[in-house]
Image 1 (cartoon, rainbow, N blue to C red):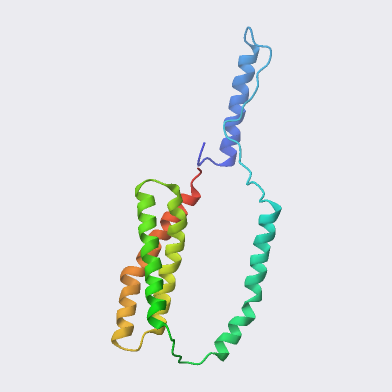
Image 2: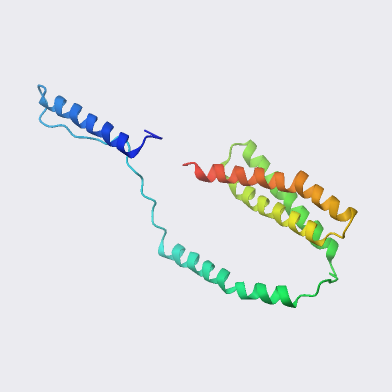
Length: 171
């Protein structure tokens, strides 16, 4: 029934009903029961705690909007970070762990690969963003753009696709 229009599905159900009526009139049958072949599954309503958590997250996100303005107008154009190498090595190490975990779980056919895939896709996009926005003009910027377009964003797209395909399929 997948892919049929609602009217065509209704027509099929009427045809089954007629067929059942014919069977009901046959010898040895008192009445026929129509069993629908396809029922529209209702989305289960999330638990109250989950709904509250969802709305709390939405409220927090909206509350941070004014903070974006404060950051955009108040941060200096240039800054020095005390632990710059640790920040970048840490980010890339998380990406490595995410890629390996996603790959191992996906290779085993484990549906849980969707979780590290989604996290890794996010990390790769963040890495591409910060690489390109913090790179010095010239060769550094060209290298950052090449890495973003040639490695980080395609890997992020692959991880995102793996996560979405898995999460959109029924268990």
